[in-house]
Image (cartoon, rainbow, N blue to C red; front, side, top):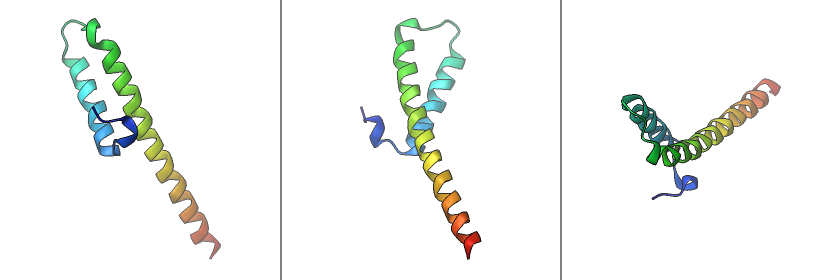
Amino acid sequence: MTHTTDLTFKEAFATLKANAQQLEEQTEPDIDHLLEVVEQSTAAYKVCKARIDAVEKALALTFESASDT
């Protein structure tokens, strides 16, 4: 399995979508695998959030420096 720090945003987002779909399609909860799905999803969320935060910061700096000129 790939470490979450090695995941791209696209891979992490795909993990979140797949896990959400899997949970939505279950007719009965799969308690035996729920913790694994939650841990995977939490790690993927952190990767996505970190990437989004980095882009937001970069955009803010870009717009800030553009407005200074």
